[in-house]
Amino acid sequence: MNKDFGNPLLAAMPKMLAPQELTQAVQSLPPLPAAPSLEGLALLSSIFIPMDYMYTLYDQLYRAIRTTYTTRTVLEGIRQTNALFRGDAGTCCATQAAAGSVLGVPGIGKTSTIRRCLDTMPQVIEHTDFEGQPFFCKQVLYLRVECPSDCSVKTLALNLVAALDRAIGSNYLHQLTALRSAAASAIAAQVKILCMTHHVGLILVDEIQNAVVTAQKNKQVKPLIKFLVELTNDTCTGVFFVGTPQAEELFTSQEHLKRRTRGIRLLPLKPDGVYRNFLKLLWQYQLTPERAELTEALANKLYDWSGGIPAYIVKIFQESQAQAFLMGRPCIDAKIMQQAINILAIKVPKTYAGGTYLSDFPPIGFQPIQPAEESCKSPADLMAGCKKAGCKPVERKRLYAKKRGRKAAVREEQDLLAAFKAGTDMLEHLARFNLLEKEREDENGDSEDN
Image (cartoon, rainbow, N blue to C red; front, side, top):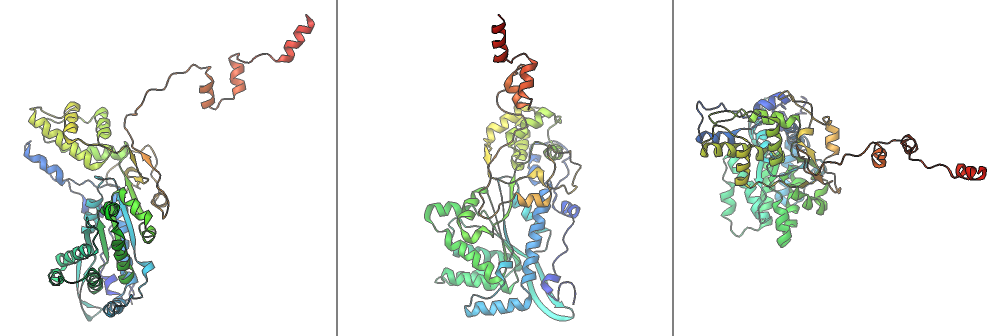
């Protein structure tokens, strides 16, 4: 028996990539066109710059899939499938099924990063034999779906079936939709059976914040949550939720989700070395006739305009070059970038829910990164800062490269407030500047002598 305990599903799992291997697999830095042109700006949409936090997400997704196949062997899968056909709840080790969530502000790169991380693994593995014995099946490592805007169990179930059809080339969706009278519960039961039959390792539900909007309108979110919880319990299939911080409201309000939705909360880049490294790589893709120098002032302004959100940084950079072409300018500058901001109408939130800044993840060695203002945190510190069940996230104010507000007033050396803030001994400070009054005893003594 090998290290995978005779489990063909576990043995077929691809090897986990090292940080440098993941970097090479997910990055997209296309070559520059031969000549500058306005049409070539579409190239910027295909740029994908790896960052340190991406390996943490990859690690969580990989371990979630592996956990599914560790808790659900082939024999256990057959037993569970038979139980579902009989209408029984099944006895899978539900508490061991992987579940989690990844929340972050829009434009931070959640969906694109997760998609690229999953693309490093084969979605479907076809088995023909195992250890010299015939073994025919299709193992689906993951399925990606979006949370339906109406929070309908039937819609989500059909979306899962459609995703399975695309993965293995089956025709299950046509068979289910042909049964127009089929109830949502019947379709949900079929989805559970299909997940067991094709050994689905992980289900990712994107745009989970849609459930919050629907819940506020018609209170229809509970059946959807119940379906996802039952899907995890009955099949041992891992479930991950992806969305914006708005979904936190849903997670904390549903008891079933509190322990199942612990995970990473992503905040934008800080105005530090990690941001400068990202901008330095992006700055190479200037398609204007002349290249603008990346100055300290320009980098700071771009950060304050974008709030450190990667998608906003790329969009502003792209639109600025477009405006330079349209205005007949040789290259971009601060005024042109301000014009691009006005056109894009980008509004950066002033506060964020609690989370971890992209700059605070342990470095994986993609590019030499300048030291950040704060030291990088360890993985244990990162998980401690992640969302805990039942805890209210600590609100964070957005950061600026150039500090806002009025300058502090310059105080005189003998100022008491300045001395207090500096931790100076107040009596010594008063004595130094002759601010102490004479003691009354001395005054009384002088009057008696007179």
